[in-house]
Image (cartoon, rainbow, N blue to C red; front, side):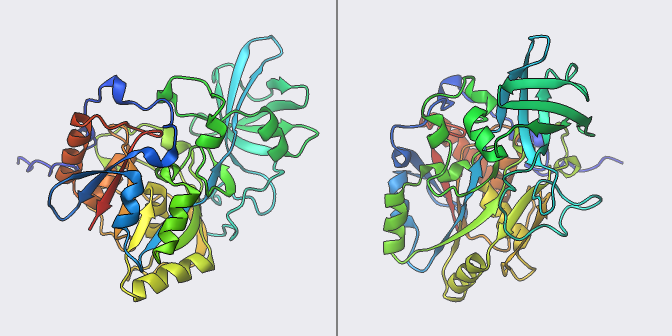
Length: 377
């Protein structure tokens, strides 16, 4: 018996596209809000090309803008083994200490998470990715500086490590002093003088991410003030971006791909603000795929977003019934990525790939430091 072909968008290979190398944005624009903005109505109609500042005209009074205020850690540590050979450690999340937000409970991914969403600032045990992986076995050490050494404690199932940070400083201070910004590999460069500030949103407050929620990089304080002056509500929540952002999808059936768990938190005030906007007929705008995943993880079957926190492994791909998001702002994502599949689940596969083809023709800048797209109802 011959099975019917899958609908387009149901295989990972459907999300391949050719991007000219010159369209990869390897540096941020001079001003955050001078990025371009592709406007994609999900219900049909012409694609429009605007500047990001024009988002003030697209968000209506009474709408709510949902921001992920997670802050990127300077979590990339460069050091040397006692032999003198170079070594690199990318810290992912703390795993020790009472109240740590560093990892889901054993045997589960949602229960018993602490409510605050904040990184325990003095945890010494971390899950990490190390290089060279074959050489850095448990018991080995890496010297980062006179004030920071890293001991490899154990191995994890996914090929990572559990490491212990040995420093007389508070861990947060040690990372600020000796850590580097974990820029995405496709930028093909080391951290520059401006990256520590520009690879953060202007509203980043809660440390815990190893990659920026990049849709928010376009906002300036002035732009947020202009939106609030237009009677647009602002709701702030947290999702700490984890290692999954670096891991490719290696299967062709999205249903077989396992997402890395990430910690989220929706404060009471944010839930109330979102609920009030919905009750008043306003639309919920998610800034970035991380805000989308947080809202969809926190919403009940009726789309009501409740305050709370937990661990999510939610992988949104077609088909998906969105409950809590009406519009969202996003950057242009890598081929075959879970982020691109989330966009396709919201906007429709054909509509999404049409928008990407248009963006390439029009010379939009892609990826973390690139231009933006807004998907409207």
